[in-house]
Amino acid sequence: MSIYQHSRVVALRKKQSREAAELYDQFLRLHPDLDGYVNHDDWTPEENLAFREFTSMVSQRHKEEQRALVDELGGKLSPLSRFELAEFMH
Image 1 (cartoon, rainbow, N blue to C red):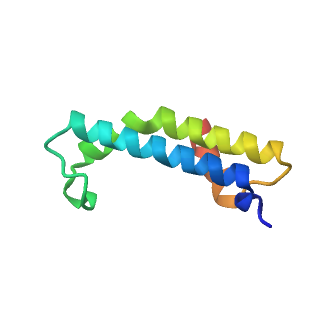
Image 2: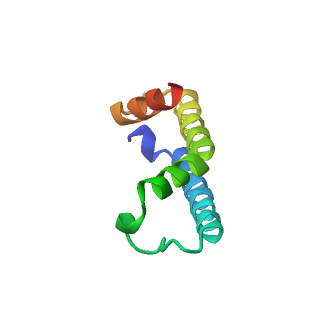
């Protein structure tokens, strides 16, 4: 079984998914002119940047939580996860 199929990892990802959805809804309430329920092709680069900045701390915390749990369970991060975490450390 992959470390990413471990019940604790699955539970953490579900929790984080709910948090991300709540944050997305909060962002859309703060920006009622944006249509967030379709693709974001109509968002300007500034609007995309605003969303990334709005969610950056939570995204970083989520990645750190995942890394800590994978480490605790004795697993190894996937190459993509290592790349994503490296991006946050810069």
